[in-house]
Amino acid sequence: MLKRIHHVGIVVRNLDEAYRFYRDALGLHVHKTAEVRDQGVKAALLRVGHSEIELLEPIDPRGTVARFLEKRGEGMHHICFETDDVERELAAARAKGIPLIDEKPRRGLAGRICFLHPKGTAGVLVEYAQPVD
Image (cartoon, rainbow, N blue to C red; front, side, top):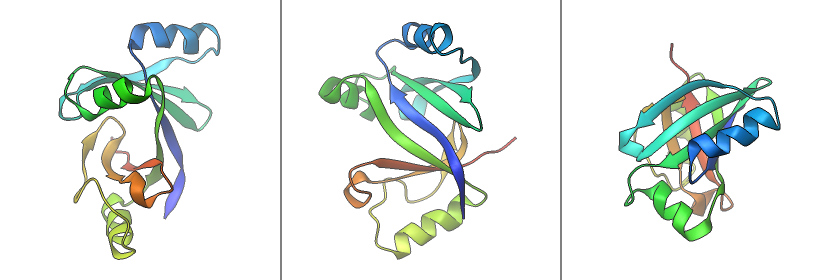
């Protein structure tokens, strides 16, 4: 069962410059950062109420986020839903015939994650996340 919108992912050219807007104009603060090499990004999570915004700066020029930035520019990249059981949600999506990017969950900044392909989700990249301590 999906619990809430965990975060909205936003691709930026420069994480530090983008963060200035969220901090100075909106009063949001970074509570978690990481370099996620297998996704080719430097990422930061900013809390806003019970959800978050994830800023993503490409660090691998050949990675999918870098290609997204080159093709579409800065902006919304994905929406992430929180779940208590990412494997169950992934299996349910597979059973419904939804195209998957990930065949099994992997580690990400938000915990155990997986992505559904936009071809099966009305054009929106959808992520499921199961936070871990």
